[in-house]
Image 1 (tube, rainbow, N blue to C red):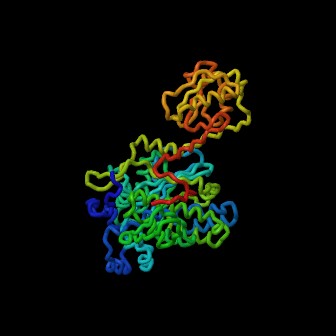
Image 2: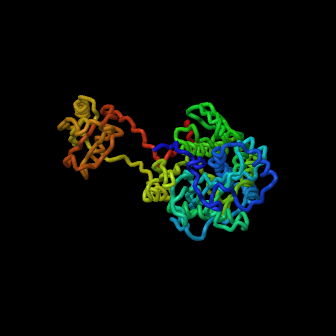
Image 3: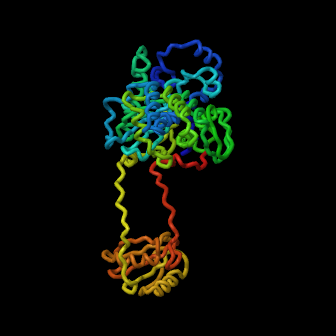
Length: 519
């Protein structure tokens, strides 16, 4: 299935919702100003060009939540926490029902990061500089679940594509980015704006909780202005593109290939682009994650750590456009995460199948089945097993003369069993039969032994360092089998190490320390 299907703002994707439920109909109830009229009168952009900016806005949320962690244990860190607490907006985002997923052990935490594309706080000059069009309504197209374990040793960020086809409580199947809009519109038009926002946040939390099987503890929402300010305050973020891009018409993104530093309007263009990218919205999600990672690396650099003024600017910029739930303690969160490093911050995308069309012929993203998703998030939030105590005791061995050996060649290299037999015999091992293994594509050399023959196997392993030890019913008791793989380099020499398999639980897993190129 193609990933270049039309996006949610293209003509064939518009859903005929009633106006009060349409997430693109704007936030009802906000009185129009003279500035609104001037912007509307001068707006000549194609409709599809508006509203693509919200995918990036969560980047500065992360920095806002973590910035106090730089000096959380000091008086300065306390002061930064007070600055954030005094400035940040609060909303009743956590529902009292429908959020009964798996509880978190100890002080572990699940935080839902949401980016909205509200432009109400932007001046006309900023709108022009950011190429952001006009306010496109109630849109939450950036959604990331952050899990932080009780010990603060790591942080896991899981992105949710905006077009994920999910079950929205009370509304049935729809795109994930419609959940907030539905909840927002449930409140009467004459109600206060913060009541509508709280209702939208609560339905989105219920939707994510049902999808993941997790309890969502906290909520944080950010707008475009905060993202713009943050990227400027840190002095730019380094990103790395595999190829040059030119998306002048839609996002305005025009970048050369290779590492480069971006900030302000250029940063917004970087994370807005989805046209001209091989995987469309999927690549845009990777861009968003890479930018967040770049911000975190910058914050942990001496350039920020040693600049108290810049730290205060970061906290101020974040808090001014940040809306969090009523109970989130920013300083406490920062203290919990102060030991997190770039290498222990992992970014993933929720496991998905690919793009598809729904019954209304809209472009959607099919996620993996419910069992797969619940298992993925259960593993994500599982408490790590305690490490086994280290042991310095050497494995027990015996005299090689007491270890009969059978040798089988599975490497695909002709004559290797005979050469290994000669060498092992010279080392004092009684060599029995030799021959070819049942398959000639063994990548790893194995030493197989019967139960109770561990000492015999250890003796052979000392002669072939790095070979895999496997208890098996194949060899007879008292005899050890050696299956030669393509990693075998000779008796007395270590086998060629096998490259560790990438631990990619979700899609496109990477850490904040990863600076390899992206689309």
